[in-house]
Length: 189
Image 1 (tube, helix red, strand yellow):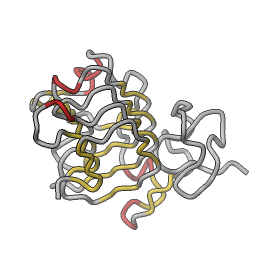
Image 2 (cartoon, rainbow, N blue to C red; image 1 turned 135 degrees about the horizontal axis):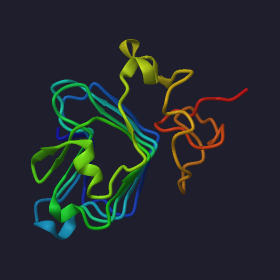
Image 3 (cartoon, rainbow, N blue to C red; image 1 turned 30 degrees about the horizontal axis):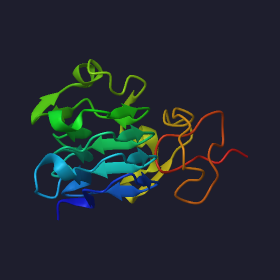
């Protein structure tokens, strides 16, 4: 398949609290159904997902072929190989809002690799965190425990988003002063 979550022409939906790891295709792919740029994935909210791609996988998030007006916030979008966090094209940039994520230093715009600094020059991910390493973020990534560990830079680093009131485990958000980034919200005693 093309992605763990494949969104052909999906509109005005909330995609949240998903944990996707070790995928060999894309993590989440938003695209057109093959009729041109008329039916791209549009107006969606990608909030509080944790995506950790396999070294041979494609990008964590793909928005191409007229996938406009999408919001990407509070996500962990990590690739453990040579690809990166987000792939998009010129037809999908209108209305794209991407910020408060944990990302790699690699993106793709029009099938050209660019750095986080170059991505930020377009106004994207200005408050996002560069991936500090899986062991710094998660409890036990080698054992597939992708809960945020104590001291993770993703804790209290997100922003309030509409429609996401709990985490992947059903714990209310936020627990601290701000939302945590990713599918997990660390419980505060």
